Amino acid sequence: MRSQGLPLLLGPALLAGCAQPLPPADTLALPRLQAWVDGRRVDYVTTDISDGPMAAQAGVNHVPRLRDALGQGRASITERVYKFSDGRQISVFPSAPAATGAPPDASYSPLWRLVLVAWKPGASVRELRSEEAVLAAAEAGELSLDVTDIVVNCPIVPGARR
Image (tube, rainbow, N blue to C red; front, side):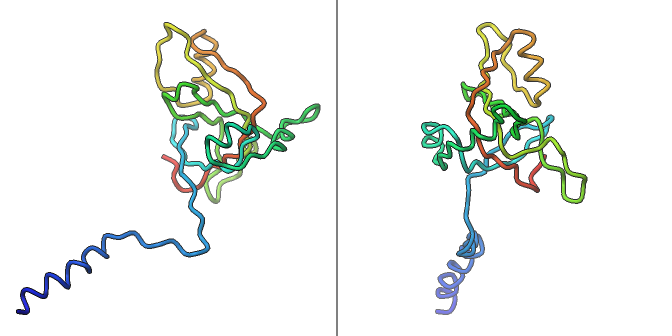
């Protein structure tokens, strides 16, 4: 009789060992997205977008005032993020925050001005992993860059740079 009851008791215990622990009640989960920065993948989250339809599509806050970050006659606090309009590849950021303990990258900002990237017909489509590669392909006439007035708040999160 013991041998029959033991598997029944062990089954739930073994399954519980494989379960993911629940996050604390004060934890918020955001979708992890990935992008390229200088040939390495980074993780980021998107919390706010200045464009209403794009914010609704992404399921994030619509914050029209983010456009104020563009400067309008004074220095902008945004950098450009290159988003491929056909979705063939992940976005490209020109900078990321410095690793813990390193001097900060003065050019990094979590506020990005969206640049839509589109491959031109006949171009050799490939994955571009840095801002330099995107700009070189544009200069070679392989793709077009549409600088928009859309600002997105996409902080790069630490610890997952590859």
